[in-house]
Image (cartoon, rainbow, N blue to C red; front, side, top):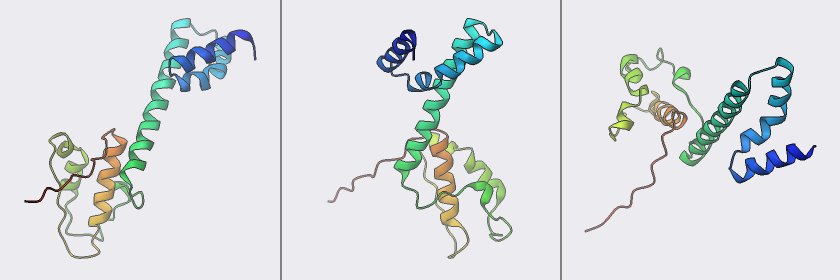
Amino acid sequence: MNLQHERMLALCESLNLPFVAQGYPAAAQQAAQQETAYSDFLEDLLKMEATGRNVRKQSMFTRLAGFPAIKTLDEFDYEFAQGVKRSQIEELAGLGFVERNENVVLIGPSGVGKTHLAIALGYRAAQAGSRPASPRRQTCC
């Protein structure tokens, strides 16, 4: 490791840019081989940082949500749960209810996929960057 690389790592640490620090050596080597413009090189490093932060945020939100298992809407079997309207689920998948701060209530007999849908919608919200709700405290009379 050369002196400039050590200074770059120290700067990345002080500026809280862990993904730039991690990807800089390979990106610099690739940019040198391809004779990439400095602005393109910098843009690639910043994209790397933004992507890394987004993945870390999604992972953290998913972990904080405490899902018992990861379920997705793509895995949901609409053939089995015939009472579920795909159009309604696709509308919910747009996460407009989260933006409007509304609740979603799933009603139906046991074993039709309510829990699957609830987890899948929560997982989608976590992947979209919605922070899990903190438990509300109940006040008593």
